[in-house]
Amino acid sequence: MSSNLTETAQPMLSELACCIECGTPLRGRDRCPGCERAYETRDDITQAIGPLRGRNGIVANFYDGPGWVRFRKWERLFLTLQGGARWARMSILRHLSALDRSQARVLEVGIGDGENLGFLPRSWTVYGVDIARTQLLACRNRFPRMKGRLAWAEAERLPFPDATFDACYSIGGFTYYEDHAAALREMRRITRAAGPVVVADETPGLHRAGIGQLIGRPALDKFWLRQLGLDAEFVDMVLQYDVDLRALTDQVWPDAARRPIWNRLGYCLIHPDPERSPSTMSLS
Ligand SMILES: C[S@@+](CC[C@H](N)C(=O)[O-])C[C@H]1O[C@@H](n2cnc3c(N)ncnc32)[C@H](O)[C@@H]1O
Image 1 (tube, rainbow, N blue to C red):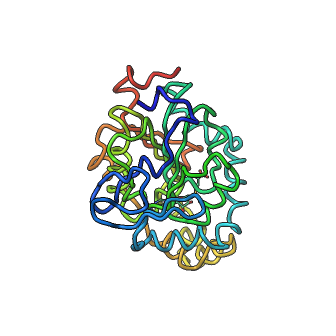
Image 2 (image 1 turned 120 degrees about the horizontal axis):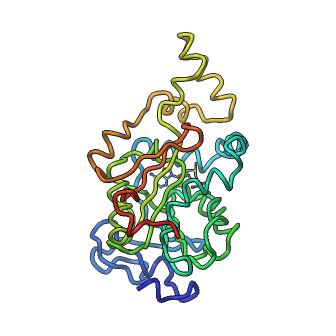
Image 3 (image 1 turned 30 degrees about the vertical axis):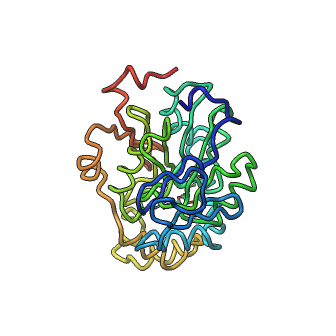
């Protein structure tokens, strides 16, 4: 059981991982013993990714490239306006607080460069996956303790056996995942029964409040989003795409809670709903 281990005794990610093709546990090997698929570890990061489809390709290009670097200051400003990074992030991370404060094995999906790690108890062992390799490298460089705890992998195909983690969370990025239902199912699958799974992002369709939409000139929104530093193909994706959260959770997580965050500019999905299962989710 993860809860009996100290952080240093916690296994490396490659020891926990399984094959994304056939599900066979890798047990630290760099080739699947079941189907022979390669799982190279490069720069302390396990490579468990296939060809990216649709939006995931566009998103990975954005976060791997200069667009995210240009846009980052606007994200920081947004969080400052929401009461500061700690306040804005803890409004989501607090839903993990039912975990044992001293020991927990936790996965962050879409970990980026690790911005949330400083807000979690140091005694927890956090692992991370992301589709942008540049972000994983930045996370490893920023937090040396993440060496061997990161995988280049998609939310939709998590390279872990069932119930590997005590909790799983994702902050930012979810709205543009290629396959939301697959990602939610995967996050639930790799988390132990009743362990919290928490997903937060900005409210879908915010772009409909753009001045261009309001005055009937959508091209104007494209222009100012480009001025914020976003890549052209990323902007096109943002302006064309919405996710219906209610339909999604009704389909995949009917017993999840959906809470507004960030003055209703964001949402937080919590599964299972802490109000429906108070014994497993009470705040410590
Ligand atoms: C806005 S950043 C958030 C980073 C970090 N979680 C934070 O709170 O600062 C979104 C991250 O999600 C990653 N991402 C987007 N789609 C993904 C997917 N389908 N699977 C895994 N990671 C994904 C991006 O590459 C990016 O690093």
